[in-house]
Amino acid sequence: MTSTTEEFEHMGVEVYMDLITSSLDIPTLNHPDTQIMVKDFADKNHAQVEIECLLRIEKDKEDSLAWSLLGICLMLGAEDEGAMVALSKAVECDSTSILALNLLGDYYCCKGVDKEGEELYWDSLHLKEEQVHPRKMLYFQFMARKEYEKALQVIEPVLKIRPDDPNTWVSLAECFSKMEPQGFVEGFVTRLTYFHPKHYRAWYMQGKVFYGAGRLEEAEESVRKAITLKKKDALSWVLLANILGAQGKHNKAVYCCKKATKIRPRNQEAWLILSLMHMKAGQVEAGKRAARKAVSINPQGAKVILDYLGKKDEEGK
Image 1 (cartoon, rainbow, N blue to C red):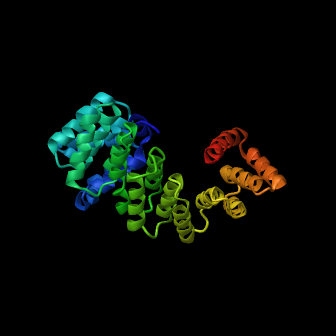
Image 2 (image 1 turned 180 degrees about the vertical axis):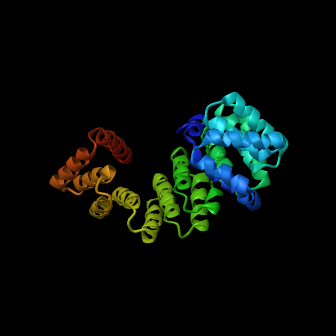
Image 3 (image 1 turned 60 degrees about the vertical axis):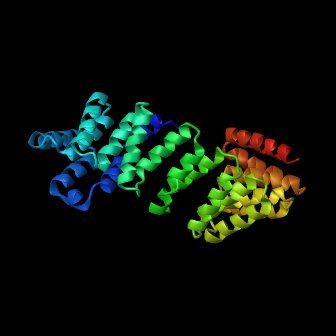
């Protein structure tokens, strides 16, 4: 799990282009002057953007957009003091500017001033609830503090805005991995499948949570629904193999692993579980061949996964 500061440091032009275009109203975004600055920003001509912003500010010292874009460029250029001044001025000029509030929130959070940063994100969300950027940033904050229920609650609405955003599904899965699969989590994945019944990831997650809770029949049903929605998903086939293996259905688990390795021939975990299931089914030579294949993909990675599988196997006895 990366910290908020690390997450900020990895953000760049693409993330802020998305924030700019989603924050500004259509008339502002379509104004010729704005389009010139946004294009220069997208092309990473940040020095030119700074000049354009300063010229606008010279004409109008209350130009919140100019202060905001200037602040982004200074942040990306690691000019901290100038960035803080510019972004604070942007919010001062327009306290209802979603762009300015989010940017100043980013600045504070990346500097470890979490309380002030989070307040700015919430102020932004109160102005416009359907936003991605502040929700993702709040998610990182909550995850860093191990406040997992809050993290789930703040990131889930992103799926209503962008149901196919893979990063959001990954964030949910990462959060689930930190929590015990009971109570709140089980209710949460059921909510996901209710609101996103046509999305295979929702059913996959429910299956994974049920599997972790030992509810094997329900887990199998959920993962089979995921596979129905997306037959060529190696992760679902691997999870189904684990579930069937836990039920003692080792030959069926072998079939699932083979499906996974056919979809993703270099999926090391699938080959290792295939090896394990072959062994449990008494197919020793086939198990050895699968293990050799797994090791050939990544010897060090194979050791880590084998150690993990060995522990899980011991827990199941």
